[in-house]
Length: 119
Image 1: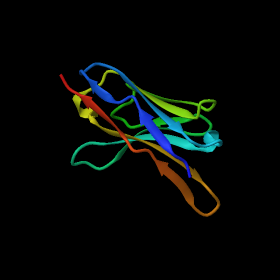
Image 2: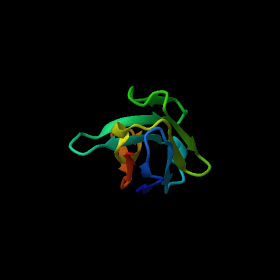
Image 3: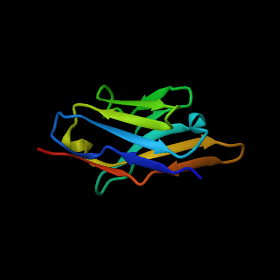
Image 4: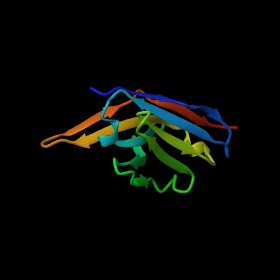
């Protein structure tokens, strides 16, 4: 069982920046693909960014050029640097860890951290 603990959310003005962190309780952090998802009120959860065990990254079109995902395997932590924030970025942001085993997908979620972009 892997526990994921997010931090770094809060209230920020449009155009501002925040950095989210997600610390994982596993000694094999490096093998997991790590991702950030978000869910706004009344909407489905959506992928924001993902980084694989080989540090390949992928982003939602809505955040490309503004958000950067990174990982520090020595600290068992994944980050999401969010710049040029917009009101539409307001959501609960969730950390995800996953990997494929032989016959199933192993997946874990954090509890979420609120990001509010408002003037």
